[in-house]
Structures are given as structure tokens and as C-alpha cells.
Length: 185
Image 1: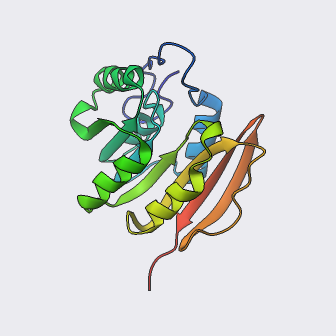
Image 2: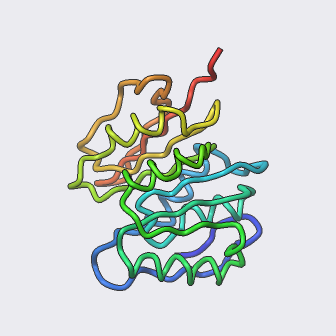
């Protein structure tokens, strides 16, 4: 795994030890950023189930100002910190060991708003719907995008409040669905 583009282009990222994490492949990562970017002019990114931190690190490399990364696995948190150090983004990131629901509640209390969210839970958890509802309830900036990585057999075709699905692509057993927050009038 590596950073594909931007200020940290070419930097190698460490994988989380063991078999508990399914890192997003470089091919899928490239496809995701071609769908949503490819570059950003500031903003904040939230990476729930961050794993290696590769998606948020890519977003920082491509111009996001701040990344908030959460994961439950201590090995993942340690790996995220190492990858942030290797890419020089430690000062632009907050890393928390927490489950996604608790992390969202804590971030909501801080009234944080995000321009981009990566949502890549273990496929067996089936928590995408409730997490989208929580995000849509006030944590997303107008025009924000939520990138959901999920099992290709699962479909997310219905809007969640003002969060509308705008694109879906499949890569073998993995699918990406991109949602966009409709601007409030």
C-alpha cells in the first residue's frame, strides 16, 4: 500500500498486523478518488473503521486540512499513528480508539462537521444504515460526500434524509457507494 497522489505521493503505508483488517486496495483507492476528487481545497475528513488510515491519509495528501480517524482495534490505531508519522500528517490528524457509534456521539458534542466521510465497516456488521442516519443528522457540511465500502451483494440505493446516493461501482466482491449531502435551502 502506498499514497497514490498529492504531497505524500509514493510514501509506503504499513498494514495492520494479522488478518482482522481488510485494507482498501490501491486500485479501489484510485477509483474512489477519481469519483470524489481527485483533489481538495481544505476541509475535514472522518474515517470510521480507519484500519491503516490509508483513505484519510490519501485525502490529506490531496488537500484536506484535518482528518479524524477512529478504529476499535489497538493494532489498527498503532498502525494509523505510524502511517501518519511516515507521511508527515500527525499534526493534521486526530486518532481515537473507539467504536463508530460512540465516536459519532463524541464528535457531535464537539459540533464537528465533515466534508468527506469514509465508512468501511467489517461487512458482517451491517451498521451502514444507522451510521448514515447519524451522520445525516447534523455532522455533514452542505455538499459533503460519504464513501461507503461494502459487500457487492448489499445495495444502498435509497436516500437517507438529505443524503442521496449518487454513484455505485463494483470491484469484485467489493462495492463503493458514494452519497452526497444535498445543500439545505
